[in-house]
Structure formats: C-alpha cells, structure tokens
Length: 276
Image 1 (cartoon, rainbow, N blue to C red):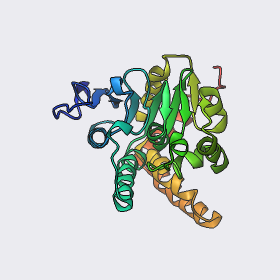
Image 2: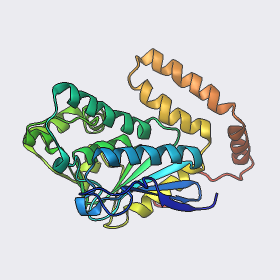
Image 3: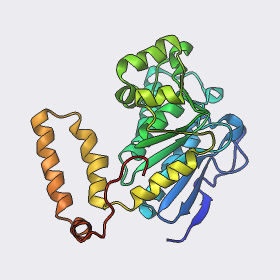
C-alpha cells in the first residue's frame, strides 16, 4: 500500500477548535497513524472529535491492518472538554455516555488492533480511550488519572469496565476516591501500560509493535481481538470450548499452513529471549 495523509475530519473549525482537522490520518504501509489534533486544548475530547475519531477508525478498518493512536501537542488527552460541558438531564447524560461507548467500541471491537502511544496527560476520557485500545505504550512523561470523582461526576466513557479490568476495581476506586495520579512506571506495574519507554519514544515503539501485528495471520488476529475478551466473561468450560473453536478456525487457515511449514523447514524465526 502507498502511504496517504489527509484529514479524517475536514469540517470547518469552530470556536475553541484547532484551525485544522480535529483528528489527522496517515497511512504508512499497512499501519494507519491516527492523531488527536487539538493541541492547544490538550486534546480535550468533545463530540466533534469523537465523530472524527470514529470516521478515522472506520477508514483504517478498510485499508490498514493495524493502527497507532496518539496525540499531537503536549499530551495524549486531558479528557472530557469541560469548557463545552453544559447542563443535561439524566436521560441526556445517559445517551451522551452511550455515544462515547459506541465510538470506543469501534476501537476495541474493530477488525484490526490499535496501539496507543501515550505521553503527558492521559486523564479522564483520555484514559478511557487509551483503555479501549488493545495495547498501550507510555513514555516516561505519561501520567494517568480519573479526576471525575473529585469533580462530583462519574466516569462515562467505559472506565468502569475497561480501566477496572486492567487495573482492578480497587485501584480504580483509589484513583476516583482520592484523586491519585499514576506515573508511567506505576501504570505498568498495575497492568495499565504494556510498555514504558523514554520520553518521546512512545510513537516509535508503538509503530514497531503495529508493524509486527500488521504481519499476523488475520484469523489469529480475529481470535485475539474478538474471542479472547469474550472468553474472560465465560465460565471455564464455555471458555475452553470457544478456545477450541477458534483454534480449529485459525489452524486450518491457509496462512497457518504456510507459516508452520516455514518453521518446520527452519525458515521461520525461533523464539528468542527478551534481550536477544
């Protein structure tokens, strides 16, 4: 594939938005690079940015095999754009939250893996978006918080499920009840970050991982993205049954046969230690 670059949201900017697109999109080979692009607003998430992100993810599903999601400017995302917050009825808040869930579900339940490259503030809705990705690479400047509890509100972008499953409900409760902020190393220890790298190196590491994923057999990717999360919610016997079905599907595919033959004929790479 040839690389292309353009705006995922070409609509005219409104007051409070950047002069260009709220989300940018670039195709580099088989990897789509998607960036939140409100740097002067610390990539605060509003409804228009959510719409643009959804459009970019949909585009990537049609022409890429992996995604790197990152933020332009000083941070990944400082969360919900409180400057655009307005009074809503309980019913309106409910549907607004469900809109966030739908966009983040497109990330989490899409056809291709998404790697988040994180730096600076990864807070509130920004943390919820990062948690919806399949892997998270944090540089040493990244920090993580859920300040909703200190602001008299509750999370609404999926943290109760996705952040709690990564960190555990007790750690998430600590963050909401006390305002605790995690640095990158604490996030890795807690299971929120998969990798921690020096400042400025998250995009490069995320790109390396995405390139590796882009070369995986599609049926294996399908199993990891769609079967594995569902198995966690099943009983032991149901989970093992689904595992066997996915194994049968993946191992009888044409790519599996070719790759296993390469390994048997010593053409495939062997597993090496972490430092190799």
